[in-house]
Image (cartoon, rainbow, N blue to C red; front, side, top):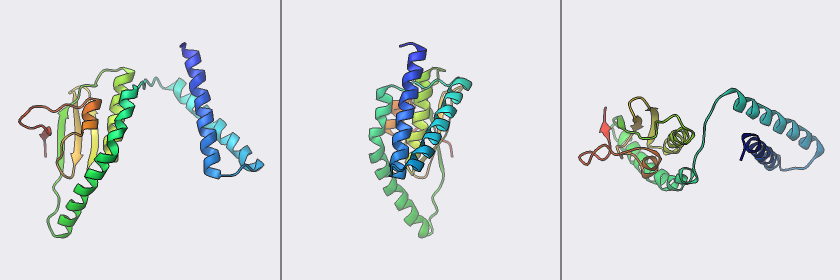
Length: 176
């Protein structure tokens, strides 16, 4: 597929997606709503086209990378239990310590796939209430995560490029 045809397909998908989203949000087909919707979709697509042409962004996730979202529900449920227990202990007068985790990260190349894997890892991991990804240092090949309860890198994060550093400490290096 040529670059122009890929761009045309992406633009068409954006137009349809934004139009459907607009109709779902307003939940009517009144003429005045459709006129405003056409203007909103046109401005949104124009902004997206401008961004794509202005910034040299490479974001090429694979289906396997996107499918890592399937682990998110379990991760959120587990972390909600952990955060609730931390909250109960905090109310009992035992404040939770902060834990910073530094672990090896393999997806550091300046390619579309590795860029996508880093972005997805930050987004998917940070959704969970126990973890916040502080950043990924490509120069040092490290991911830095803040956790309330030390639990190590999730399976989802490891699938996107995180690594357990050694068998002695499978959760990574606690640096706090």
